[in-house]
Image 1 (cartoon, rainbow, N blue to C red):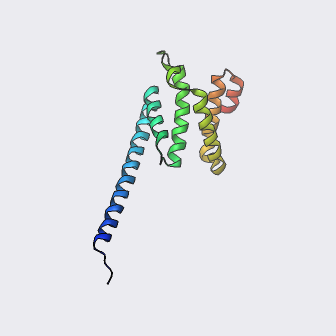
Image 2: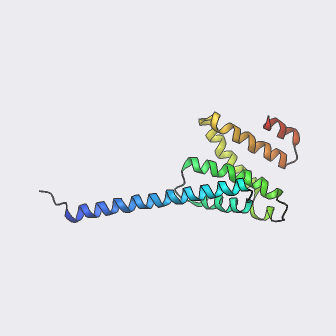
Image 3: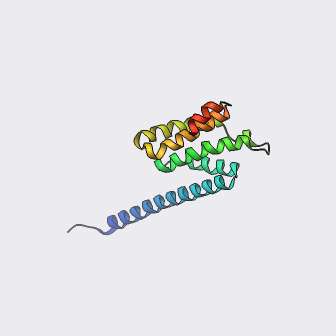
Amino acid sequence: GESTGPKKNYADLEEKMTSNAVYAQRHKETMFLNKMLQAFWLGYSQRCHHYAKKMLEMQLLGRHNKLITLFYSALNSFRGVKNTNGNGSKFVTVRTLYKDALSALRSARELSPWNWSNKVYLLEAEMSSFERRPRDAESHYA
């Protein structure tokens, strides 16, 4: 017969540890995503930026969550610059966030236009507005 004693126990332990690590990663990803979205919708630009940055630093971030994070991060950057408390431009770089988000969202739009086109148009409109090109902004909003 085949020996299954220590080898089997080690394999079980390794599987359990791997699944716990994956679970912990997914839990952290979900928590950061929810906190980022809450901060965005409550108008806390700096907090939203903080959690978006944490999300984008994660090595095993899921593709969909990365796209959502890039979108809200870029959208939030416009809000941060318009922030009247004087801190806006110190914590975000609008053009960098916009460029990264737009590149990723355009690629996603190729695969699913109905899901991502509206987000691409909104970011393009916000950038046109940011650059004081109202006619271009209107065409993207329409």
